[in-house]
Length: 147
Image 1 (cartoon, rainbow, N blue to C red):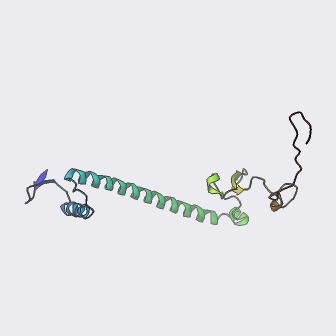
Image 2 (spheres, one colour):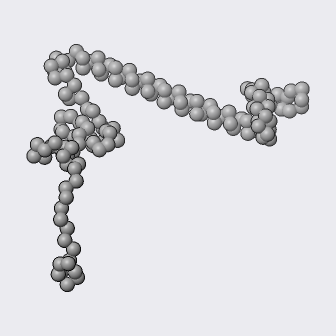
């Protein structure tokens, strides 16, 4: 299980001695203490786990991208989708997909970013709602009389 080297230390099988030496040399350049073999093995194990997780995420992303491409290709050949274009495509899944102040509105057949009805009341332009309106404010005494 363990093999011994010329310096008298015993390393486990499959141990990368060159990487261990480089790691400690790099730590020494920054004024850090060298790490033990056990610490190096734990770090290498963590790096391998992270590498495996990243590979799994990359594979999942590639699979979803290919699935998306297949779905788009299938929709491209559909007669109804040719006639209506992207009317039924969802533009958002949640409010986080839309730019503020818009929100994700579910219209039943389609989800899209909308302004939740702002600016369409009485046909008045939206920029007119942003203008301030001057109103007279009366201040009364506690007894109810006006100044």
